Length: 338
Image (cartoon, rainbow, N blue to C red; front, side, top):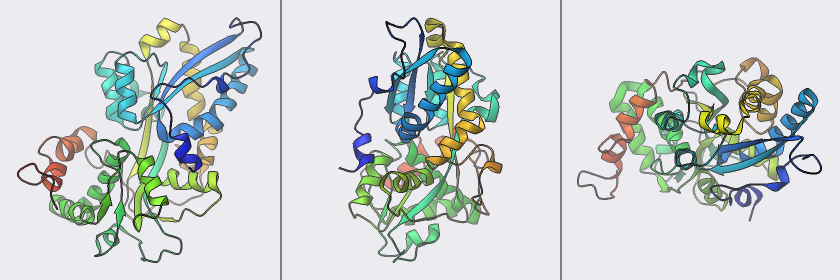
């Protein structure tokens, strides 16, 4: 089992004693605790990079130690766990709509997006991973619709990350010729999808086992493969693609109960500061401040705001009877070919 697959085998709520960094001898008198509920893709960047660096900064600035209790899960499942009582102090999620679930539950402030960078902490791009040497000559979304090309991406009904992938395809189609072109591009690519796993990590594992010619995924996932395995994880950035933005928010009831608001605020500030952003870049993410990154941006990069926002896209594509259901399920609701 490769390292990424192994790291993905975590419980919905998992406390990692190994990350209880430098706890003061003799008990908790000299230590503060921060409980983190995060989506699974950011696990390695947090566990190996961000948390040790933040603990060191907290120690230097306050004279106190900090220990972390960590939970990693699919973004929607993590949001539902927090809404159902998991006592996270901060929520680091994949989708803005997952934070909105916590707002509706009365756990996160309604104005969470008014903070720095609109409440976001990470950026990435939707890209196409291909086989070494690019034998199928895949360079753009249209190439994924060619006859005989095997495509992978996870199921948007179970994976938040998959919605970024589908939105990128749909948005590129919108730029070509409106909704009809968007539906057509999505339908033609979906016709070449050979398997749809439940999560992005599972989809990546399937691709690594040799299934398919191309995978639609986060750029940072492929760069993480290179970092952890030391092997090529080749990909192309389509000329028109979607900017992925990952949100974070303080869980108000938890920090009030734990008395650690200052710690939670400092942690989110560290994530957005240049030091934290450089660590996230080392794990494949794009920085909030593009001046920190020498990598070029694609010429037709677009955002969820350009697509009308999450509410509009969720209603247009993913609601019952929306674009996804009409394409994938067919008129009688049975699973059928596009």
